[in-house]
Image (cartoon, rainbow, N blue to C red):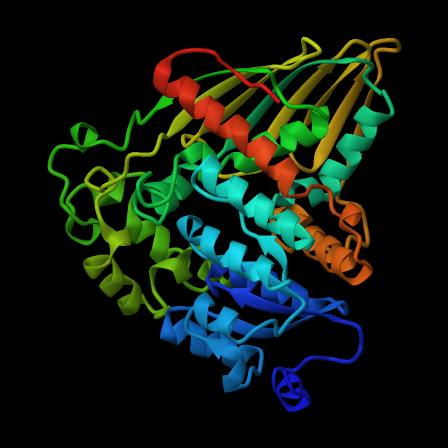
Length: 430
């Protein structure tokens, strides 16, 4: 590539990591904002299929036409025009761009999950390792201040030997309806099972805390509520013309009109529904689009509750519960050790010492946290900074996981799904 082209795509000479963004949806935009906030990185190219989204992204980042592509194939055909690529396409569209761009020498930041199947995820890992590039899956929970404090407590032996863990992901009733009943992750054939698309975060996080992978997995769960036979008598096909809508907890009218005027809720979830953030614009989207459908008449089949039980080589046990039927909030975890216990809610940790009976409360959201409010309680910002740091230094050890580590935690997800479907305990061999 000649020097004129280098200047055209904005390749800086200040040592900042240059990134191409593949998929300029909500997650691609989030990582791009965080890269821009950092002095260590710069967005220099985009590949996005949707013309309006592509144009808006290019304008936001002042990208020349030579750095704007309709899909990843066009980007790949241009050769290596950035140091790294963020891949934030839909889950089933990760494999091909990841393999191709790694082969061109791009370092990869890959949105979770890696891929819908173990075979595809293993191909991504192999491609990254064969190319000798740095690769990370966006397991952002590893990078929160809360995780840093909790992991430190465990590593320093504050509660002795870890014996048992209970972990809850409270998805939230309206979030379930938005993303997993009406939205892009509602149907396994189009995305993947709930445990993979939503909760691979949690099983990866547990592996990080424990420092090991389970050897045996059992699981139970299903689709309990969002089914045609649960539809209230007299309900309509769409919320905008439904007689029972005012009393329905899953009212799309209430949810999305309630986002208007709230900048944070306009960015998500409303932007997934419509780009017209007016009352009439929202109502028209609910009349015509997927987000206005009755929550009991969608083509959803992913579970709305699931429990996973795990046993580790040491004999330690853990349980993970995912449920739709909660307020949307931070994950909640209880850790039980031989000398103490810890209860945490994603921000505050309460540590009880069995030797003294005393309980200490620690707030992980300390003053001066530069990543506060950047998504996932600072995890998004923490991950981006770690990735940029690793690429600049050429040191993958500055990340808290690599592709092999992520593949191992994904395998726990697939084992749990096998256990749920068969009713059997699945034994993992590593």
